[in-house]
Length: 80
Image (tube, rainbow, N blue to C red):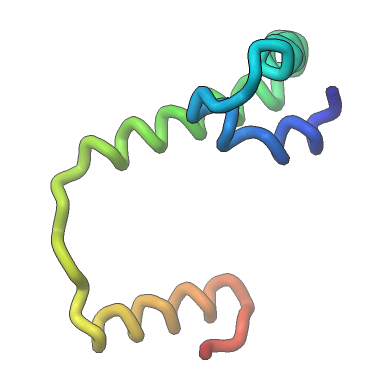
């Protein structure tokens, strides 16, 4: 498995949705690739932390538009 192949199945791996054979292949790659091992650890930690955050409810339309515009500018994309 390559690093790119791992990234393609990362969400399914972390979500426990891969069949046993693919899960084992991913695990072998993670155990042998320090870069991917660190990335997966950070990814799963981020998910765990974000799930523990309190829910803030629906954003106002104005705030959501402002947030989307700021993100688009930061990411170098055109706002829609």
